Image (cartoon, rainbow over all chains, first blue to last red; front, side):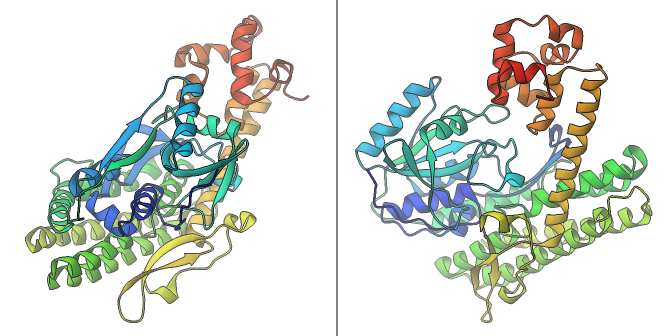
Length: 333
Length: 133
């Protein structure tokens, strides 16, 4: 069977699935809106977590957080289920498709056969929508893909029960109750305050202070770890900032798009101004990526130490700008 | 970023005709989305990461041939895994998996344990024991 489901491509999977499921149920919510109301913007350095043999740095809230906060703030109730047993997971999925209910699934990326090989890493917090089934083939709407795609039952089971950090355990979710009317104003204000609080948190690993900490680390890496490792780490930072899903500039552009939309919703001119300021900050992150890539471009180990200082200084400048920005944003709502 | 400035560099995405979505502002300063085929700074970062993995695989292979480690480590690298991920797939402690890297321990592994590794890597036990076949 095939459910009449409209696929919209998005930059990021989690926003995309929420936005697509909302649209399916007759509520038009854009991707930036989901991202903003879910307080998706963040900067966090997680020193004890290594991803691809480099320290983890994230530009967004924990997987699932955007989703939870959005649902809570706009008053949509989601049903979520996890499974121990793959058979039970499949049965529940089929039952939902049977009654024309497209569901969101959390999956691991490594076995997603329709992704280019180079992008298949062990990352378990990817999201997609299943909107139908033909014999043994499931119809998939993966929000980061341009068009819809398919997975066999076996492939789907594999990605639903991927192992490692954030193991999905067959995680399946779908909206069950909606408010009569979508009231976004309060949710927007609450979400913006939350993001400001996160970004200005007095913790060395989070938000603006986290950016400064990482800048300090970049200065130390070449001496402490050798330039080869330092280059590898720097490459990983840029990948986490720009790889599939961030919409460019480590989510800063999506956030600027959200602020622009929010300014119209709230009739707040100040937010429009801040949106263009956020765009400029996004441009600075892009510049940082360009300069960092000049360092790791040739994988040679002979690199002048000064260049690391330069990109670190650039990061510190971005941190200062963001600090000023979020202080202003806090006052604007 | 302006819509017209969204980079359209060549990248690994081309192999599957995949284009990413980027957020950018149009002439009127309004936010919109634009497809991108890739951007050099991240293409370089990605291909460096792939190179890194290839090197790790080659090193592991050499170590298996020199009888310094077991084929498990080679297959782990080949599948872009690290110790925590592999341990989680076979349902064993990290230190146990690490112990299985020892060729002497690997030889004595039960067929049940070997099967778990084989299933994880999607190969037969025979292939697990002989990396060149």
